[in-house]
Length: 564
Image (tube, rainbow, N blue to C red; front, side):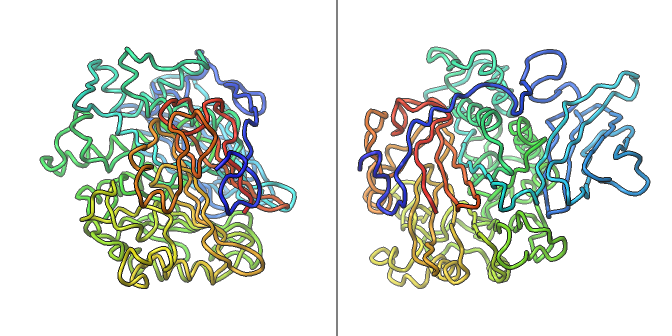
């Protein structure tokens, strides 16, 4: 299929070679600097990671601050955009003395303000000189309207633990081993890219063994530099649940660890996530749809500690309209000033619904029908979709079924959730009773509730799949969001089931433009404005020849565009 005929269901042709010039600098004239004024991407002498902001409702903005272990800090927070704290706070500023653990604050910003600003001043308690972060700027959840676009960046499946030692490649440098384990190696690559935008790991050196960290660094730096999203959505499979990779990271075998060691490992992984995303998290809310490699599947024996440290260091919306107290499934209305039930007003706002496809499966499913959201989550989902909004999107890591095969099609004793299988017709000939697949019923629900798209990860490609009509001339789509990792899975692309549902990969090595889907490295941009909604798949790193993306496309170029 030729480049400008991308996907038979596409309403518009593919756009290629947008020519975006990726320059390494803050948006709006600020610059990223490797100087002594403020360390990049955060002051690691005083903090474990950068600050993190997240909306849990339109008028609830949480700020989390992580002092460095062993440090006691006085922290002064100045906030503009209404009085965010309480009536005793003077001029939007509040000081906290002797902070030595997780500092989690809730702001109540002025709903009439579309851009909030804050700054930290901080010092060790025995010092007199105050240091300062740059001014942080955070878009309001209410800033989307008929005149302003909504922009979300979708990434997933960065698979950084795949940089672990393998039988043929062992990382010898002990400092790099430490940086790899705690996540700081992604920041190391960002600094190298800032110093030299053409930097690429030397194939003869140790850094060549850390290519997923490199492409993730390139991706996050690019999002920071050329995108201005309202939020970022990660579709899962980042760190924590790759137990089979632990020995290659210098940890014990996952089956030979004590409970205390499990706690220690999960803390390392979750703080590492905060470190990795510190370039974005002080200003852009980041939300998560948990994947099968994030440590919180029902069959993971480290689930409880993984959940504990996620909630401590990476807060997500909980409670409210039945959202899970474990913060693993939840919904948000963007652009609607409802502050109570978070139901939204009919026909307004963008409903973002995050489901957990992993937690309620107590063992790895053997057949597609074994996959489930669990009864409580399923009832919550039905309720949360009752009130229609202008747009509704469902996010989960993978479909609740998929073709009857494992990680590879030759594996037939497990069902791994592969593929864009949504309807009973998709499952015809693969299972004896398509109606036994939970996804089939969910898809029927999504059609009845006018959901615009189901967005998922897991398969490491970008693909848009027309699921069926939902009335008013609209179509329900399934969108696989791509991956920033280094390798495209050529062994997957050659499978019969893969070809049946995703089509042909064109040329692995990027020498042609013919493909029915696109592999790494990239992210998906979702844009909604007064003229409608579209998704773009954007190249985010150099990874030839391990991809089918045309080799002439540069980071920042649009690979494919699709009008919803």
